[in-house]
Length: 442
Ligand SMILES: *[C@@H]1O[C@H](CO)[C@@H](O)[C@H](O)[C@H]1NC(C)=O
Ligand SMILES: *[C@@H]1O[C@H](CO)[C@@H](O)[C@H](O)[C@H]1NC(C)=O
Ligand SMILES: *[C@@H]1O[C@H](CO)[C@@H](O)[C@H](O)[C@H]1NC(C)=O
Ligand SMILES: *[C@@H]1O[C@H](CO)[C@@H](O)[C@H](O)[C@H]1NC(C)=O
Ligand SMILES: *[C@@H]1O[C@H](CO)[C@@H](O)[C@H](O)[C@H]1NC(C)=O
Image 1 (cartoon, rainbow, N blue to C red):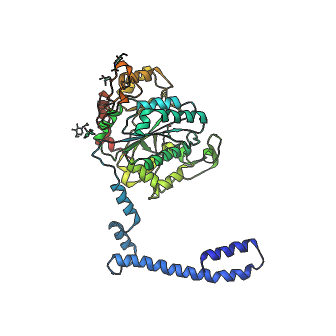
Image 2: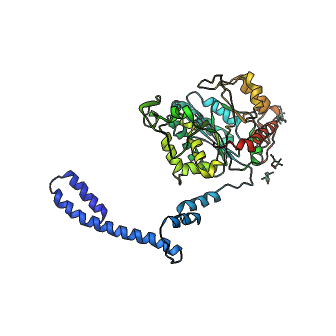
Image 3: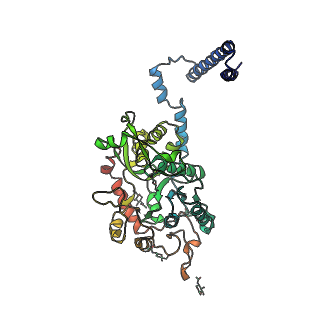
């Protein structure tokens, strides 16, 4: 007597044309009967919920009572989810932990390891993604390298994504991959406060001790995301074209393509754009990934046909979500230099950029050519790196005879901030000033 039975009989009829009229009548009656039962149950359930929660008092179900319900949170599933999400916040008393994604393509594995070692700290979490353009051999090598490193093995905070993705330049597959990495980190580790996005051609300009020390003192709900609202001609040239990313369904790498149709501008949200390099909080990323509100999902779907979506997705979500708008700090924490007039890619930093880089007070810089001598200078003069890792207070081994001080690990919550911490403090002072924050999402 169920809908299922009715459906079965519909399917049967689909295959055999004869006797259709007859069985049409056969299933119509049970179908409407079960529909009636369902509707009765449903309306009594809804009615029951509202009467019982108001102590039997009759509540007229109109717009006025609707808004009253919304104020007295607790009636709708979303408010419960929000409570859970506030509770699940990781203790703010402890120093923070960071989650890094380091991504690269064919031929990048050596550089990724170098960047990883330069930003390594046992407090943090790391995930490496080598895209599908890299040959399997390279991925195996990277996996082997991580697996055979005694420190990574013992601490267990470095992961390599086995499932690699096809990533199209400027396409949605680029940030889909970032979202996947974030989802893995949310699942695998409860202990991180900020997510940072690096590529193989990025390098730090402060030690992790500097970074963790300075961020210990910072509110854990600040998102570092450089952003501006898309307006004027830029809005038309970015938001009207419709692109398709073949990386979403093809197993071979190819470029994005543009359709001949154009679409109108969105009216239910405003578009923002900015740097693809971000440092985002766990709570904002839970909001984006878990999707109990529809805004992040709607915008994700919108951006699948948008050119340069990695430079817009998080920016548009954060500036359209009321609870996060005030947490967006308009800086990507990177030193990036451009030609004038700017070309498509930033310039590769070399020795002559060293002073400017340091003076910028930014904790990271990009982009660097593989094994550029300036990286050795950064290792020596900024990171004080002699062994595998840029050392911190957690490295308590001796360094005589060229042995690695980090082979013996001490307390992970103790930091030894150096000059890098002062530079970073300086930058944050400027970023957190009222003057700077006035420009948020406008
Ligand atoms: C994250 O970093 C990678 C660097 O490899 C970049 O390509 C990507 O666009 C970044 N941003 C986002 C939002 O995914
Ligand atoms: C933390 O903040 C307090 C108050 O703003 C300040 O006095 C202190 O120097 C800061 N400490 C660090 C490590 O930044
Ligand atoms: C650099 O490392 C050496 C050896 O670990 C240490 O003695 C020295 O104080 C460090 N210098 C800085 C600036 O951190
Ligand atoms: C350094 O090497 C010398 C000779 O190889 C050895 O006698 C000494 O014990 C070593 N020192 C440390 C701290 O390992
Ligand atoms: C590590 O250092 C922190 C901060 O100084 C301290 O509170 C904690 O007790 C230390 N932990 C251990 C195991 O010594």
